[in-house]
Image 1 (cartoon, helix red, strand yellow):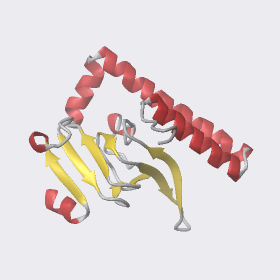
Image 2 (image 1 turned 90 degrees about the vertical axis):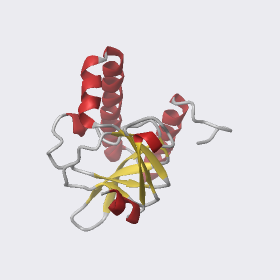
Image 3 (image 1 turned 60 degrees about the vertical axis):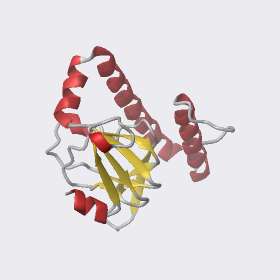
Length: 171
């Protein structure tokens, strides 16, 4: 419920009061809040408006493995469109204060299937994410930890640059 969300560090605004006016609902998360619970179903359809999050997998030994970072303009997950009743294999957690634009799932799916330009953009974004994960997987066995960190910083810089989010040569 909205009250549980507020108590847990999340502010929920209906569309008519959403300060971003971009969606059916706006959710504001404090830093270090779980947005999507690993191994639980999630039909959340949202993009990041402000802030940073990360996808992670909690391992059997209790440690967390960061899979990827989520920046403004990214979708939280691409699995919502195929089988929302299936558990998500990873969790999503906020790094900073984060604003999400949440969309009503059925309306979003209608737009994806009926608006050719949006469908193309959505599939392009999904394919780019898939490519990023494949590249990262190949890097794990081929690069040193220092080289992987350098590659991550370059990747984040390129993603921010592609969205016009670089200021004073930084993000």
